[in-house]
Image 1 (tube, one colour):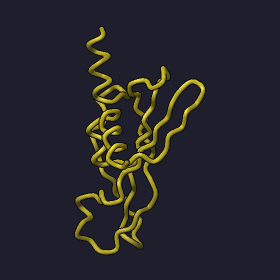
Image 2: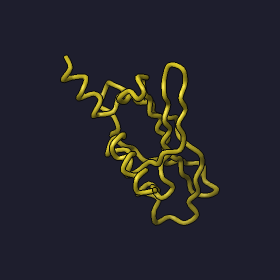
Image 3: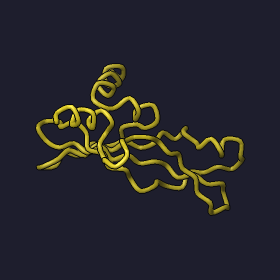
Image 4: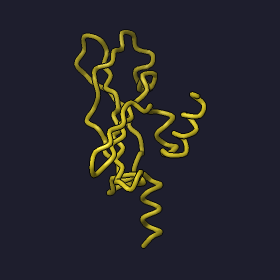
Length: 118
C-alpha cells in the first residue's frame, strides 16, 4: 500500500518537493484544498552536518504555492522548512529551495502550464 501512495504522490506533486518534504496534512475547505508538506527531519543544512548538538527549533514561515486544481478547487501547497540551531546558541539555520519561479507563487509545472495557456 505504501508503494501505491508513493506513486500517487509522485503523480500529483512536483518532483522538486518530494525528495525534501513529506506530506503531513490535507484540508479540504468549501472553496479550496490545502496540502501541507513538512521538510524531512534528515534534511539538516549542509553547514551544520559536522557540528555537534544540532537540534530542531520549529519551522520557518510557510511558503504557499498554487498548484493544479483537485476536485475542481484551487489547490495550495503549504511548504514548511524546518529551522535548526546548535543547542544553547540562538543562531538559526534553514535550507533554501527553488520551489517556484521568481515573482510568482505557483509550482514550476503549474507556471509553465499557465504560460502555455496564454
